[in-house]
Amino acid sequence: MKFQTKKRTFVGLLLAALLILGLFVYYIWHLTFFKTTFFSQLIFLGLIIFLVGLAGVTFLGLVGIILSVFNIPLFPSWQKITRISVNAFYPFIIQLGKVFKITQDKIQRSFIELNNYLVEVRNIQVQPKELLLLLPHCLQQSDCSYRITIDIKNCRSCGGCMIGSLMDLAQRYRIKVKVVTGGTLARKEIESLKPKAIIAVACERDLSSGILEASPLPVLGISNERPYGPCHNTCVNLGLVEEGINFFLKRCGEWK
Ligand code: SF4
Image (cartoon, rainbow, N blue to C red):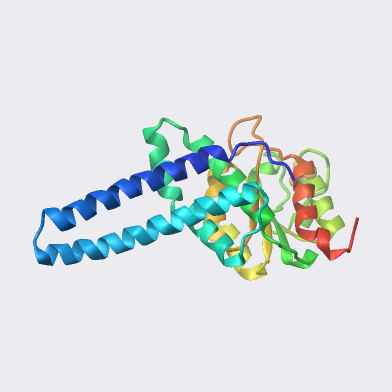
């Protein structure tokens, strides 16, 4: 499965975060042993141990990403550390991006790309009933009156928007599908349906926060297209959604 945007923005910022953390550890170490009393040395020592641990997890995460890029398999626990370090550093990296004048959109796209890549390298296989396709309400034609958030089957497949085709796709592969109006409803659906994997369509901002919240659940994020501006009559690349379904189901041998 190929995704369009680049991972390197996020990986580069993660590396910058590691360097800053390293400098900070050095600074605290310097204060601990050269500038302070015995009591404050103890406190600083605790802080150093914490920061070194954090730097270690980040370092392992970065190495994990690099090995994954070269298709070198990782132990499941190392995959977990990689995922944790990427997710834990996300808020810091958004702030760091501002320093380097990198837009939030670009970082979020890069984060989604990296997340999708890390999902791809995990050996994930689910049954159709364990896969959830989460769609945003803004895919629906704005003047359509059918209540698809209650049940997508209320859609009449009139061709006015992509909901009908997405519903057909979900039915063809026998996966679960829900249309949600935001993060709260998405969380509720995940809690009640208990999927083992998710394909989520949304804008970059909602996808990033959703991926972080759903972790460690594997989420393949697909950005919607917004020809009429945000949150209004949006579209999605159906081929990418189908690729995502194929990715999660292909080992089940129930189709194709
Ligand atoms: S395909 Fe037609 S009926 Fe279905 S949600 Fe879109 S506009 Fe409404």
